[in-house]
Length: 185
Image (cartoon, rainbow, N blue to C red):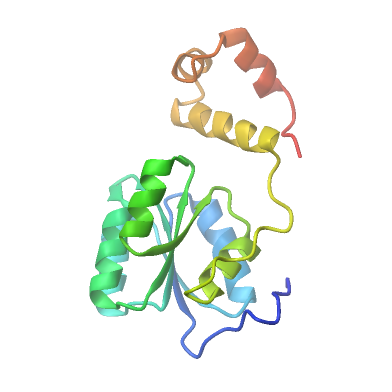
């Protein structure tokens, strides 16, 4: 179990919903946050998350931006309609300024790129409302962020090297060399 700074304390209601269509990530993050004291409920779809928001709105939520059946921003709206004080963190593999601004305007307290570290999620959820969370202790290197992005696009293209290279505006052989290497640290 990782330790959080002394000024980060769990409130009495530590109910947390994790919405992500990536099963292994959802399970791993759920376990890690349970170990840190949260009462975790998971959802795989926008439909499931809206049902949870309506029937048992959590105090905290970690919501993926892009899901197979919709957009996580719609869940942010549903959570705030059911419980105004819900603190929400947006996760996405598609980090860009426009979606970050949209998430914050709709009530998210932070916006983290996948794969997010459980400690970073915890710090963002538990930071006082008027303060930004502490910066990550060990952030991913720029090379690792690039590698993760390439891997994500590759997966979304059905592991089709030619299609991935086209979408990334990259030469196919260059992409093949990158895919053949280990992930940078």
